[in-house]
Length: 460
Ligand SMILES: NC(=O)c1ccc[n+]([C@@H]2O[C@H](COP(=O)([O-])OP(=O)(O)OC[C@H]3O[C@@H](n4cnc5c(N)ncnc54)[C@H](O)[C@@H]3O)[C@@H](O)[C@H]2O)c1
Image (cartoon, rainbow, N blue to C red; front, top):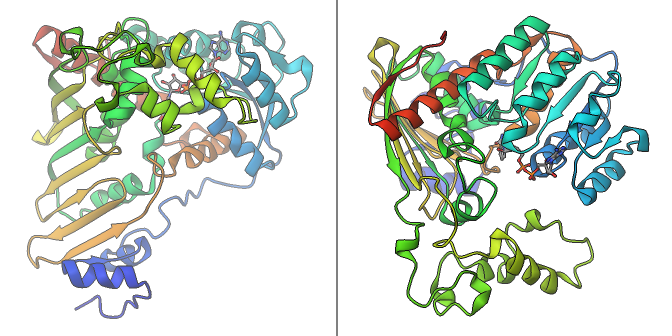
């Protein structure tokens, strides 16, 4: 047995090993066993920066703060010198956190570009419909960009940004953060080294989770595909990107089914009311009750910008539930996003993939099954097991992380390096490769709506 030299200090790991006959190893051990790269994040192009990259955050909401926090942890690499957000509380909080001078605070993104360029780069984390217009102006002004996904709301917008990045020679990193998570990085390394032979097919699932589905895609910012973007783009362009990245062959064509099955007026239970706070007769038994999620369980409260002092939270949360979409009945919203989607995709070398997005699950994250000619991999973002067909040996890995698998700051690190050294080649998630994932999502939506098989054409 090639494994006997590994010393297992962890009792939980020993128990796992005895119970499953699968070896639970660290990445270091798996890399040694299969002769893979130990440091999956090591990039020989990463070098110390002569000075920190300076950046302006446009959109100081949830995502923008996550990326900009990198500057607080690594001030020698990134310095946030400006902010634009039309929400006064968020603008003020961000300015205090990053010590931004009054002259560099803006209430709307347009005002940033009325000034002469005063930083190296901008981070764009505004709502979906404000990605393409902001990015185009930023590139025109000579800024490098870190752009939240989706790149744009239409194929045309995505292609224009790609062309503008090429014509201005600026760097555009797209926030496909899953590429930077340990789980997907390791899968990529295992596949590239042909540890399971050649890939034949992949099944990949994105379980959104019933409460996250209700929060974001039934009640929240992305409930209407016409005012934001189709869920296959808004939520799943990460997955079309990951599939193409892992399979590493051109995508040829795809076909999509799916729709809105559950969150419709027809399914509103008898006795339900427009808002959960209106005396709904079934509130106590509804898994989507806003009173339960936000008021009793105190979950997903970041959308309410609550004051740091908690003493008035009861009153404020109830008021939000009575006045915003977050208190509305999930069966009586003006939502149109599908709650389940299945896409069949054909890649080069006749490799196939099935992607399914599921809104009604009790769990979140990603589930992946990769079928190779010599073995297979079964994973769920926090664990994976490689099985060797010939020996039957199973090797497993496990790590508890956030749902992006710790990828957010790895992405920022790569982008800062790319901007600091003016080398887009440092980035994994560049604009050109990211555009492909978006073309796949647009094609899937066309297929779903028109019942067609759609070819993916990189050039118009
Ligand atoms: N990469 C990922 O994994 C991931 C995850 C979640 C969301 N996202 C994307 O990130 C983006 C931001 O999402 P979020 O959850 O942070 O949203 P958010 O609502 O928390 O933040 C958006 C911010 O933009 C500000 N804004 C709106 N209009 C503006 C304007 N005219 N000028 C300046 N600021 C303006 C809002 O006030 C808000 O603070 C969205 O496009 C979303 O799709 C990406």
